[in-house]
Every structure is written in structure tokens, then in C-alpha cells.
Length: 556
Image 1 (cartoon, helix red, strand yellow):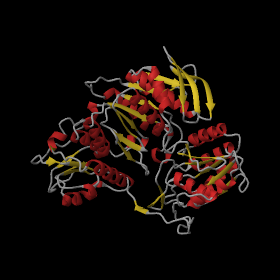
Image 2 (image 1 turned 90 degrees about the vertical axis):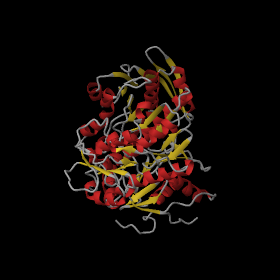
Image 3 (image 1 turned 120 degrees about the horizontal axis):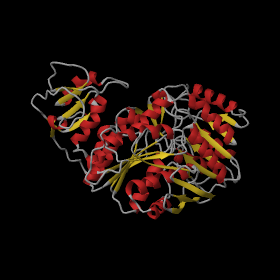
Image 4 (image 1 turned 90 degrees about the horizontal axis):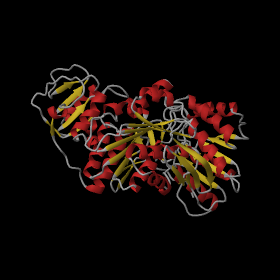
């Protein structure tokens, strides 16, 4: 079976691509969305910040966007500064495309359309989008989940609990958006969607008759105000460990970005359905003391230690998952979770705490909700083609997550654990050595490979990782290898596996592409593992996805 060249997705504005794909999926399932119109002045009626109130004819607005390429006749264009470009430079293009008004941070005159001056255009975008869609979060019970690791799994656990309890719930995660009976894939490199997209989803959920929404929120999403105006009622944190320090600059700044979820609970407006305003904190995590101080509202704590209000005891690991008891102030539950790993005990406790203390769900119903969740895409996902060893794909892409995944792997097998992973370019460089060092300590064999190098030379990334592996006690060519092409790295790991071993492809999980330079190539670790196993076993299976490292096209 010969590797086939896959589709090059092309130079990317990641969030523009995701928005277009989701819109296409929505249109295919439901037809063209209904376009509403609202006067410009109406969008500013409850605007919480100062602004220049010159509406010049008060035009009707039919959409709100910060991307001039998405402007259509009737759009309000919000000129956002920062990032790769300054939106103010695209105001003429937006007006040519049909923008009827512009919002920006720079004093401008003589524009052929009304111009509203604001202090922070990026933050304003969230509130204007919310106003355009009729403040949908006010009609919903909003549950925000943040953290470095475990956000998507905890979101899915809580969603399973809510659905099992008979609540009409929706969910937005980095894997998918669930709106009623529709599931929209979000498998590219996406964190929290942009503010207009978040508000559109919430509006669709209101229209679908949903009452509760679980929204996975990232530090980038908070730092860039994408989930402002979501008026959260419950905030949940999984953990705050080493990640995204390239963007935030320090752990303290990273932690502060995530804390906005909790601080915002205190400003959520009263809702007809009530305001739980509950913060759910991980008593075991280093973030606890900080969040406990900055958030002064009602709290629930979970963890494995005796100081947590909700804690796990009698944890038992089985081939089918985890079994444990959950102890609360006035309840004791028996929980069976089909997801592997000690970290999923904590994720379960977080979801159970939010359900019981935040939403008043019966404890037994919460436990049953955990039991009914069979899996989460790309999270410790087993790939079985009939091979005599275990193969799985996981999203672990931080030192903490990789350590937890490898420790789980040790619990799942009496054989060796073989890890395949890389470290992304244009991201926190400290992770490279840290992750390789973790793998050298906790995996029996380690294969270092490509993982979205972007514009950083792959050779440099792998060289840094090799230094980390050596510092962790690894020996190149004996316990760890550098293999540039991820497909070949996966093949190598599977060929090395003996009966009873466990092979883990980590770092990509559910994602559907990999970035070299500025080009995205269609890639799915799950497809790659199946392709390599099919080759090895001589059975039918998918072709190995193409990457430019497989034929020498990429040389850095």
C-alpha cells in the first residue's frame, strides 16, 4: 500500500477556515441561516464601555465580523488591532465590500460610513456580537470549563450527566459543537472559537430550545476576549500547569487569563432561570490557592486529598476503565468510568461537583452520567486492527498530560510502553526538553517526530527534544530515536512493538491537520495508526496520509 499525497489545505488563517467549515456544515444540514437586521444604535444600547456615539443615520446591521474577507452588504466591521495584522488597515476594503459601519480604536475622520470609536475593539467585538444575536447567554445556564489538560474530557463528562438527567444541553469544545441533534466537527487547530461564532452557536442553541450550555474555554480565548459576554453561571477548572508560556509570557499571566472565567461570575446579570454562580476548584492543583483568593463567590472543591469537599477513594484500575467511590458532604457514590487514567478520576470529580452543587442534579444521576460516557475522540482512543499489542491515540501535548498518559499506559499493560510524539513550532520552547525528558523517564521507548513545526525548523525542534531525552536518562538509538516523518515514526513504533506492549501516538488526538511552514496538510493520527497497522498486518486499511517529510519536499 503506497502512501498517497493528501490534500494541502493551504496557507491558513486558522480561525477563518474553521468558521467557514462550520458555516458550511450548518448550511448543509439546515439550509441558509436566517439573516436578522438590527440598528447600529441598538447594538450599543447595553454596551458596557465608553464609546463615541456618532451613528450617522443609524444603519441596519446584518452581521458583525472582524474579518474584512467575511464582510457582506450590511456588515458591521470591527477593526481589531494586534496579532498578525491591524484591522484598521482593512477598513477601506471592508467598506468596498459593503460594510455599513465600522468600529475601531483609532480616531478616524471622513470615512464614508459611520465610525464608532471604542477603547478595546477586540473586547467590544464580543459584546456587539452578543447584542446582535439578542444576548443568547442570558437565556441559557452557562457552564465554562477551563484548564491546561482535561477540558474536553470534563466537558463531555458533564454533558453526559446533563443529558442523562433529562436537561436540554448543548456543548462547544475543541473537538466538536453539539447543537441539539447536530454535531459539528472542530478538528483543526482551534481553541475557543471567535466571539461572533460563539454567540451564533449560543443563538442557535436558544432557537433549538436548549437550556444549558457547556463551553470549553482556553487561555487564548480569555486573553483575546472571545468568550466575554457569555455571562457564565458555573466555572470549572481542571488544572493549570506548564503551557502557552510563549503567548502569555509567564505562568502567572497564563493563570490570570484563566482566572477571568471565575472573576466574571460575579458580574453575570440575573437570569430568569437563576444564577448558580459557582466556582469548582481542584484542591490538588497548584492553582487552588490563587483561584481561591481571586474568586470570592460560592465554591465547591474536588480532589483526592481529605481537604476536598468531593473526593475519590478506593480507586481501582481495570482493563475496562476505572472504578472508584466518590465521597461528598452528604453522599457516597460508586462510579465506573470507561476512560483510562488516574487523571480521569479528577475529571470525573470536577464534572460531578459542577452537576451536584451547581445544577442540583441528583448525585446518583451524576454517577450514572459518568458511567454512560463510552469515550472522547482522540483521548486514549484505542485502535484495534487485530494486532497482538495495544495501540492508542491521545491528545497529550503538555509535560503534565504526557506524564499522566504514560503512567496510565504503564497501568494498562505488563509489557513495554512506546511513545511517539513531537513538540509544536511557534509554541512554548521549554516544553520540548520537558516532554522528551518525561518520556525518557516514563516510557520504555520514545520516538521523537514532527508535530506542527510551522515556521520553526523541524531539525532544531528535534535537537532540543533529544537534549531533553538525554537529560532524562535516554540513550539515542537505544531508548529513543528521532524520525522526522510522523507517518514513518508511527510505523517504526508499531514494528518495534512486541505482543503485550502498548504504543501511544500522542499530541494530535482528534486534530485533522498538521502545519508545515504556513501550509496545513490533512492529517489524522488515528488514520495514520490504522494505515501503518494495515501495512504491517497485510490487511485492508486506509492509506497513510501524506506529509512533506515523507518525500523530501520539506527539508528544514
